[in-house]
Length: 209
Image (cartoon, rainbow, N blue to C red):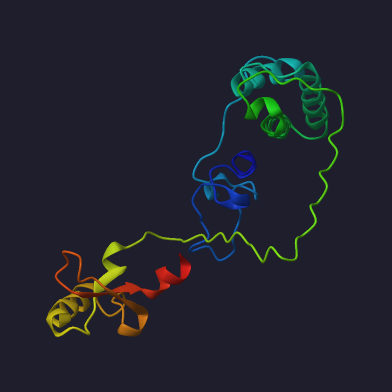
């Protein structure tokens, strides 16, 4: 959401839009250079009424983004930030500041009313590591592109009965896409209803899974 406000619908800053780097000699991230054509779309909503009135602007945005559940404290803080940003820059940048702050408050992330106790949240103590627990890690892998099922499980040429199917597979896929034997992991498919008792699973998918 922050990226959407800053750059428009674009892959910049962790955004969910398209990546326009292809074909660009110098990559411009979103509309960072002031040119909107580097983004697929942008947010163009402007609150109606007097844009010099920070309270009215924040009130309209708060109704849209929080169903007007914003606390008086957060409302005042965002209104002050909008006012200061507008004086230092322009209305467009001030609107981005106000919207970014609204995305950051608890009221945007909940469906109920938020009650603050006025206390500062203390950082949680870091738990001591148990030397006997072993190593644990969370591995996140982003795979770009689609999972081509016709190139994930293919006829393995080891069995003579599957050699014609593997030959047809290579003919259909072409030399650039067809998997070689060393790019497959051979698995037993004799208990399935597949025409081949041995099939190959693309090695790259097995490593990344």
